[in-house]
Length: 399
Image (cartoon, rainbow, N blue to C red; front, side, top):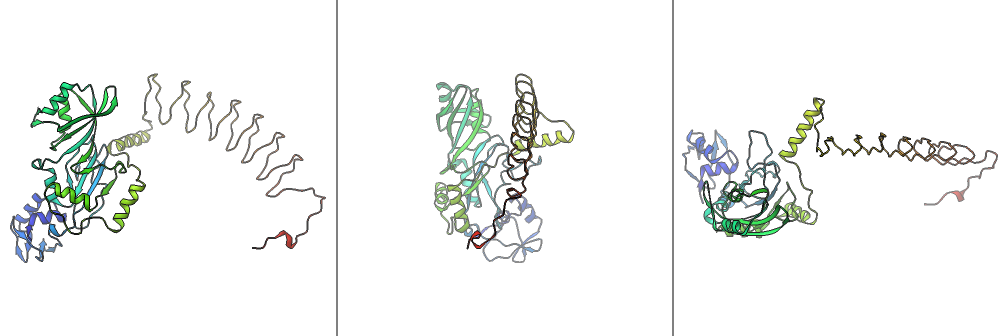
């Protein structure tokens, strides 16, 4: 089975199809020693070279079909490269040898939830094409009241800048006050379509989470910023939905299968942050370099603070709690105003090193000091005139 040359070069990871067409037109690509033409088809066993260097390739139908699901966090963009150097959804994906991940659909920078990635370009194209009417399900938090009239308007259809749009289904799933959650389904993947449908009715979307794409549902055990690879049954169901045949070798094996099983039993911690969190870190670092500490949250009484919360008496503190204006080192300071190092400080005002000090004011080293005032090193001190026990075999245990 043959395949178009520019498609093979793009799948190998040398560039986009359009760029590969330009490279072929420039005469830089040869097949079996002959200069290739744009649109030429290539078969298994042909020798492919670009700028004289041999390129290893496989026909797409022979490649094991793989699909990843990724829980996109807020602040990441759906692009391979960004001129503003913001983090992208491709940064956390695993490497794939002699192939590349193709993103299925997009989410804007402020949206979160399910994203699909595959190495099968035809599968990705069919999943995104509007003619196949693949459902996308979202959980949406809306600021404002959704009246029955507004709900019916969005189900019947509204007119947007790029044409009519509507929700296939609309149901309430929770929340109270002005922030309520709704579950909506669309069959197209137009830019910011869900947000624009709500905005056409005077409603503002404060959070948007994609929970399903076609037959794939966002798993409960998958955390923000993490990915998981689908097994054979899930991939075959996804391919069947767009009328593609299953491929041999599809599925998880070995370490990949055990990794998915471990994640289901013990999910990885969420990878928080993204571009918005990084922006805050950069602002704080810049503030420290200039000697100015950027304030965090500011309360209504006008008190600003850096890392900890100030109390109503306006006393500021470093790492521990400050009481009644006294400053601490590492431990709690009592009401009598005495400061201590690492251990308990008693009411008589004596300071300790590492062990407890008794009421007679004697200080200890490492062991207990008796009432006669004698200090010990590591063992107990006896009366100097008392006879010592002789060492004998009974003093030792046999092992």
